Length: 640
Ligand code: PEP
Ligand code: MN
Image (cartoon, rainbow, N blue to C red; front, top):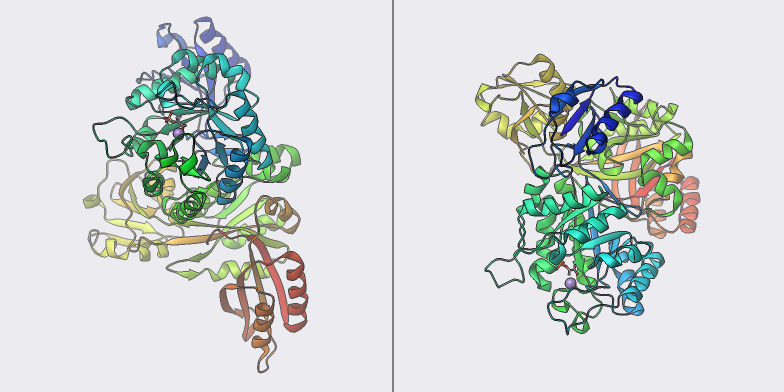
């Protein structure tokens, strides 16, 4: 059952409820949500829920209708994020787990670890205990293999995962690995599930070859009720009559299971297909279907692999696949999970919370608009889902909040693929010399027609949205919705808040699905933008003194700067010559009027970053040549 607690509940009341439930042999789990805190209680005992409902501090009690309780979305609405070492799985991230089917030698795992890490894998896989169909096939190196795996993980700064096949190995494996893998053949080995669950360590739970989705979730329930809530589900193909592939990848299980559970789901295209050439297209399909990542087999010499060679990718194929996935990420509103480097990185990327404690300063992230704005969506892909956001009325307020220290970071749009550069952002960067750019993120803008629950397209008479939102949906508004009037509003998410307040079923808004969810409104039609390749690029900005912490978590490969030149022939040419001399490859060049100086212009440049020493020299020459020159920031470019 789900026990919804009253907002003003005291700690003593909470304790009393817990004790009451425990005395009736229930296991209790507290889930703190944005809106409410609940207790999930599961147990074999039957109890009249009215006995719980009358306890002090209880707002409501709802029975969970599904056989899987702790794993169900009914109990926990928000996505669970699983922490594997310093890597996170779930939410808006795409993770790539890669490595050989089996650990064959120290050399082999070291070589492959280096290759997959360089290509963008964030967790290393490799089997030390191989459950093989034939007892005569290679069974794995056992504990020796685990030692090599751990060593490779440490050498390349990657968490590691490997399959556990026997309850008697669970404790021995504990210190070697960051995540247990339960293989398809063991999905219903309940004794193994209970033993592994007790450790509290993350578990990658593969779907059994002939398991229904519900049976798979019941296996997760075993793990959860034994003591871990860190579970990643993995679709790996099921047995069907089709023999063209090793198994049949059940792609539809991905969106289906996400409705049923809060646990993240990834998929394994290697075991699902058994064919190397199928791995890349299926990986893209997996990401497109909404999964949180892939686990793939990669081998430096697949033809010599001890097991599963024919389905193992060559390292260069894996590298290409990672680039294709990166290109797909913004389409599905996700970003590739990277390995945070060093301690400061862990503080920022590993959890806004920890930095909050260690610095005792605000870590709010400011954005323009109301809750659910596209900028807030961008924040959630850069930082954690539960990042503490600060809505501001204008872009200028965002910069002021950052400059005054009311927010640690600001996330502001800088360019849209349809609307072009957002000049106000550039001007504000110019007028805030203490604020610098530290990051870039692009997200796909997917507009939805949002109305009151129960409303429908034919009922709508007025549509509110930001003028850009209305313009970007012109075809829909003049076609299918020609009977309705388009009303400009100051921002998209604000328009949703507006119709939510007015409660008029004939009013609708155009905004993100996040805004619809936030205001508990209904999506009457999704994807109504005229041009589906509508992306917005955001900058992450902060005060100069906080920049090193953010930058240390990523590879810096972009620089943005602004300059002006004196009014004489060839002055711009001289600047461009310096850029060319130092190999500063320009990605964008735009001229902007200089505020307060009519008919004078500055130039805004984004370029590929060069090694630091070179860059310092280039900067010195640029300062000497330009009338004015300022670096707006260095960052990791999200666009390749
Ligand atoms: C594996 O990942 O190495 C493996 C054996 O997978 P599955 O359990 O899905 O067959
Ligand atoms: Mn394998």
